[in-house]
Image 1 (cartoon, helix red, strand yellow):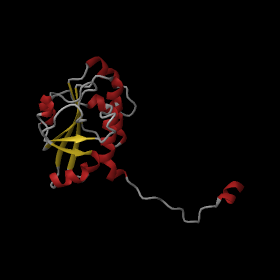
Image 2 (tube, one colour):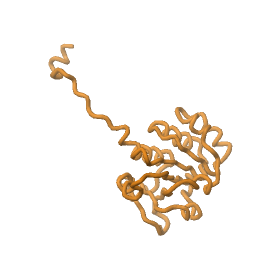
Image 3 (cartoon, helix red, strand yellow):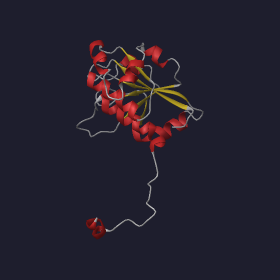
Image 4 (cartoon, one colour):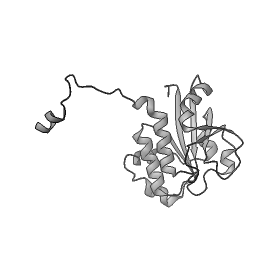
Amino acid sequence: MGSALSIRFVLVKPSNALNIGAAARAMANFGLEDLRVVQPHEPRFRDARSAVYGGKLLKRAPLETLEEAIADCRLVLGTASAHNRALRRATVTLPALRPWLKRRLPAGGRVAVLFGSEKSGLDNAALDHCHALLRIPTAPDAPSINLGQAVALTAFELSRPGLERSVLQPEDEPPDARQLEGL
């Protein structure tokens, strides 16, 4: 995303330490640092702070109300599988997210992406704060995705432009199979 766009991930009522840790690690892996946590299951949240690469991020993450976590955001997206409720907001799929954000916020600003609890996703009260919904397309027989995986996929998609590198070609012609065998 452009430098004028700031991404915040908000975990709402997470309860599984492995998922919380996986979410923080994924953010760290893709260079995202703005994490907020709303009503975590406290004993498990403390356990998650040992996550590889994500521990520092979790220690810095403020525990806030949802209203506090999104107060300075220009746009709030809620993640939803859309398989068990009627959705009454614009819905954008993950592959279309970056172009959609460029059209929606051409001057930039802070965007919050809300991820709900592992058992039930975002509740209606959290969805009421969302301008639009973000869906990760899945097979119809498995319509919802794990919290840690959803954060990883979303973090990858949003950070991809900064991570893409060109293919480096050696100056010399690469060896053929016979030459490799001889080596």
